[in-house]
Amino acid sequence: MKGAVAAFFCAAAYFLEDHGKNFAGEIHTAGVVHEECFEGVAARSISELVNPDYVVIGEASGLNIKTGQRGRAEILLETFGKAAHSANPEKGVNAVKKMCRLISELDKLQPPVHEQLGKGIMEVTDIISSPYPGASVVPEYCRATLDRRLLTGETKESVLAPVKELIARLEKEDPQFSAKASFSVGKEKCYTDAEIQGERFFPGWYYDPKEDYIQKILGKVREAGYDPELTQYSFCTNGSHYAGEKGIPTIGLGPSREDLAHTVDEYVELTQLFGGVECYYAVMEALLL
Image (cartoon, rainbow, N blue to C red; front, side, top):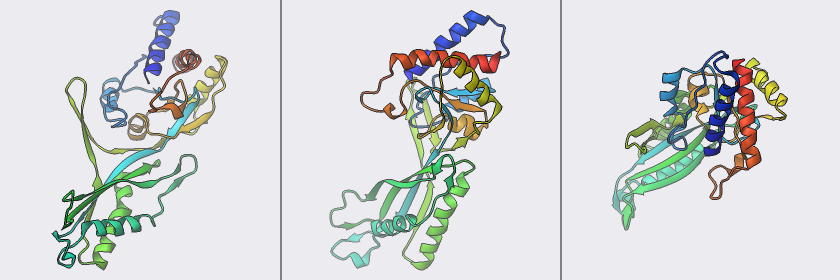
């Protein structure tokens, strides 16, 4: 993203140099904190301040144009049991065993499918019991996290509904079964010492490539000598807020390969970096002239 931010600023500077103030609108560039942890939470402040008509996400795309992405949610599962000495397990209720049953049943649920974005995946990413370590103790509590990839139109209520219905069924079948499902809440400290906090629910979004603004951008980028594909991101971005929450027309367009993001030796090729400047300039031409 550092490469994309540099390309944003350069493209805007060249555009202002060439056109002065003779264009319809304003150009804002933004660097957003903690995007990797909270896709779109800090961006809410930016859209409130600027209220943009269009947004360009600078995440790596190989200079292809991204018109959507799956969102993501972290679902927190909790099961509640009764502690006992493990030499007498029948006197307790093992919360881990209850969690195992819950997860096994969850695997039978079929998340929705979007024609362009793919499957709304739901996968267990961590699990821990209490007390931990549980030497000679039947665990009275267990917590697991589900990574749920979100599709367009899904809400907090619609995502949790099938999980809560399953829990209600299991509680009816087993008087000793007790569980709860919710969205996890994260908190991080920014470099300014300010805290950023948010519920981990970041919507998916998708725009038809035939949308007028996308076709205008595509035409100008082609005039600049590039031939981008119209595809979707495989990961989550700040588009979860701009497009998913606010409904602002959005695209993704960034230098370097998507599969290099968050790798140990992440880099951006100079040809991609320079190309990013030219593509961003073309986007400004398409939307402002």
